Image (cartoon, rainbow, N blue to C red; front, side):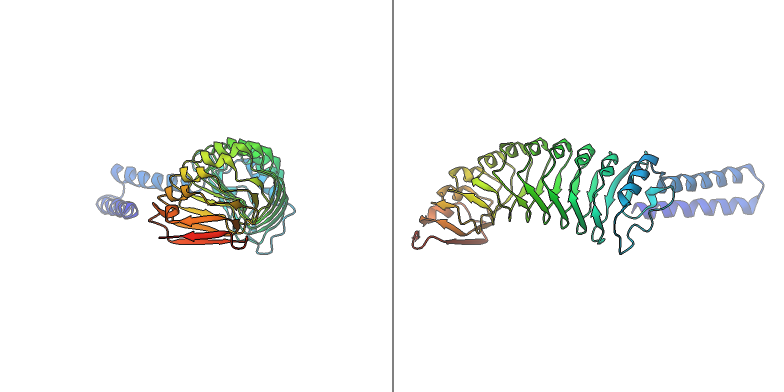
Length: 333
């Protein structure tokens, strides 16, 4: 609707200028009208062609250096105005780079430390490429970052503790990489996080207690990692959690009774955790929003009764099996 209004206004202005020109091509009214029309076009051109910051342009060229780019996705990265380069979005007022998006580009190479010089970035999306090597410590300089998506690459090594400096981060997608070692305690500083997907990596050890500080978290996916220790008690503090995926891990012991205190939980996936055992608590039945419950491939024992499902009227999918023979009994009336 706004586009139609702008187009209509432009047509009316052109019509007015034409009419004035017909009456008197030398009139002052005509000259003023044409000046206004020309100035309005100049403003629009300036807004669509913000000039980038020289320091950030140099950082991009350093980032590009040494990368393999078979699809020539970075072919446009020449000249002075990096705001016109492929995958780059600048702030129209300041010229600072706010988005760097190069999804599915088949780019390979290591992530340069120069990435930390793009301090106004709000989105860094390098999904589905072949970046390798460690995540540079300078990533912590991106204090304005809201989305970090490095999924489906070959980035390795531990997550740097500097990731805890990304105080505005809302989405952290690092799945299908080669990250290893324990999660840093500093991850608990990211209080604005809503989505965390670190699945299909080699993250090990018990989860830090600080993960319970992610009070706005809605999705936590740590599947297919050798995470060990008992079911993380810090998860009980994630009162906004909607999806919890911990399948194919090395978590051991029983499912705690407090699992029923996650009021917004819609999906719980604990499939293929052979070290999880004990009875399944009846507090599962308190999860009124639950739609998907996956408990197959564990070592459960004890009884399953209608009490386990007394308030789960929204449940659509349910999988349950036990690796321990003859130890799980259904007692349904």
